[in-house]
Image 1 (cartoon, helix red, strand yellow):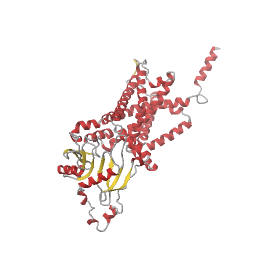
Image 2 (cartoon, one colour):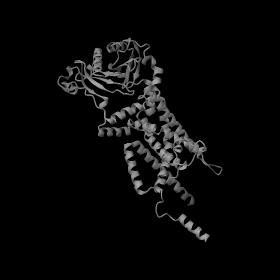
Image 3 (cartoon, one colour):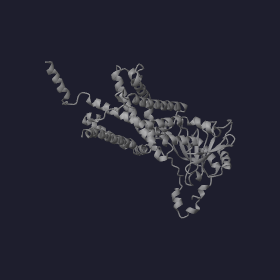
Image 4 (cartoon, helix red, strand yellow):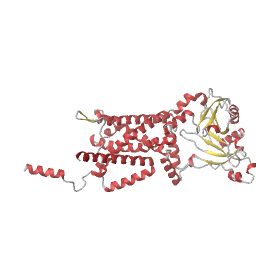
Length: 486
C-alpha cells in the first residue's frame, strides 16, 4: 500500500502540470522583477552613485558661492538709498569698457550687488558679469559667468550633468535618471510583497527594518526600508532630471508641443513698427542703423532707468532683469527673477520712448505643464524652498548613497561560503522567469516596454543591451555542458 502511494507521488512530481498553478503569474512577475532589480542595481548603481555624490555637492552651491565670491556678490554695508541703474552701469563700463551691454539684474536682497552683464566676443557663449554696489555705485569685481551662474556653479553643474565630458557625458546622467524610477518601483514591489508575507502583514514590517535579523536579512531590511522612505523624492528627481536630459528631454518637449504646455512667449514687437527682418532686407537697410556694426554700441544707460520705472509701475516687484531692445522695432524686456517660493516670473515688454508697457506675460497664465516643469527644475536644483529644499535634497542624496552601498553589501553577503563551493559574490536570480508569465501579461508587458523605450530612449537601448547580453550568457552556459559531454 505504501509503495503504491510513493509511486503515485513520484508520478505527480515528474508529470507536467496540465494548467498553470494558482498564483503562477504573480510568482513569475516577482521572479522577473527580482532579476531586473538585481541586474539594474549592479550595472546602473555606479551611475546613480556618481549622480548622488555630485548632486549632493551641487546642493550647497549657494553657500559655496558666498564663501568663494562673497566679496563680489554682497555689499559690505547696506545703505539707505539705491543709486540709479544708469550710474551703476556707468561705473561698470568705466571699469570694463570691453564688449557690449547685454542686461542688468537688480539685487535679490538688500545685501546683494547689482549685476551688469556684458557680451564679450572672446568669451563665446559666456558673459562677463560686473558686480556693483547699488548704494555707492562702486565696482566690487567681475566674473566670467554662464547664464548668470558663477564659474563654480557652472563647473559643479557640468560635473553633475555630464562629468565635464561635454555632450557625450550627458548619457551618464540620463542613464541614471532613466533607470532610477525603475529600480525604485521594482524594489518597492519586492519589499512590500516580502515584508507583508513574512511579518504578519503589519505596517511595521513594511516601514521599519527588523533589528533582530542578522547578516543579509538585516542589510536587506535597511536597504529596502530606506529606499521606501526615500521613494517619493527619488521618483521626483528621476522625473525632473529626465525633463532636461538629451533624448528623453526631446520627447518631453514633443509632449509639451502636443499639449500646448510651453510657457507663453512675450511679444516684443513694438506696435506699428516694421519687423527687423523687413528693415534689414529692404533697399535702405544699410542706412537704418540695424546692421551688425550698429549693435556694437551700448544703449543709453538712462533707458535702463526708464524701463525699470515703467515695469515697477506695472506691478513687477522684487529682483528683475532688464534687457535692452534687440533692434529699433523691438521693446525692452523686464523679467522677474524670483526663484524662491512663492515664485515670480512675470515679464513685460517696455517702449522706453513712450514709457509704456506694450505686452506682458504673467505666471498665472502659464499652462499647468509649464508650471510643473519650471517649479520641478527649481526644486531639483535646490532653490525653490531655500535652505529647506537643500536639506531635503541632501537627505535624499545621502540616503541613496546608503541604499547603493547596502545593495552591494547584500551581493557580497549572499556569496557561497562552504569550503567545497566558494565565490566572491552571490549568484544572480535564476533566468527564464518570463516563461512563467501568462500570454496576455507577456503581450501587455512587451507593448509597455516598447512605449517606454520610445519615451525614454536611453532606458530602451540599455534594457535591450541587458537582454542581449543575458541571452548570450545563457546560450554559452547551455552549450558548455554539451561540449564537455561530446
